[in-house]
Image (cartoon, protein in one colour):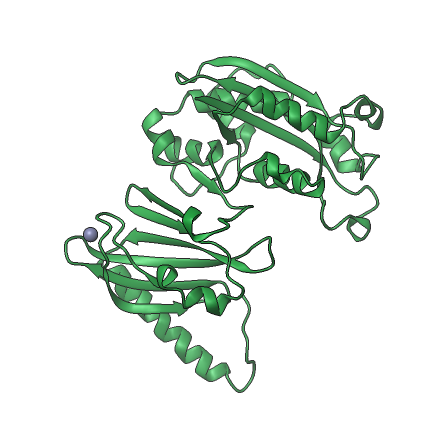
Length: 321
Ligand SMILES: [Zn+2]
């Protein structure tokens, strides 16, 4: 197994958002990566510039941040050639690692634009090094910049930030400093491509919580009436937990519930409705260990929402968050 720590730079429409191609708001112009072995030692590197095809001149922000010129990019490879070389170098055993979640999204969006999404299988398990840094060194909610983390760990700053290879190299150094137990307890799942059928839906169990990622449904209502979507299996033992509070909507895309496992006590469920690429929706359901006070707070939240909706009924019929 290899850890492929990568970073992308991208350009956007230089003539403003109203002129951009909706299917490709960010066009990849550079791919940089390092390869780490099981012991998190660097064993290889990859770098390529990509010649842009959609936005051929650089947005002023890109020029400022990335320090590349339009002329530099003309020497780049066409996207398909660059990305095929990258995947060939990464190899079939790659575990992709990035700082944050956007690089995986933009990589797939660019592949999608060129009809190459089949080159990248999703949904994909990956390591979000930004999140791992937060879990290892701070609290689990903070999300720091790459430069902050480099300073925090007193790593040598040998190259400029915001160039794909340098950022990948720094991200790799940060990953090497993280406890393997933290790395494997906190992997992430990218859902740019959600499961296509019931057989490949995702049921992942973590320490203290579980995650379910569904196939597509035509509508939110159909998703929310599916038995598997509504189920509340205990995230510790996997047994069906009895619902104390049925699923209720807290916003247009969010649902909550509370259940109780005879052995492990209170658990809480959260569902997020996501847009699927096929035009339908899919759900991401998280089941977490809870406790009586929190269960009571969720019940009160439902009550407050009910009262609010009752009051608002004659004014507005739908409320968007
Ligand atoms: Zn249980």
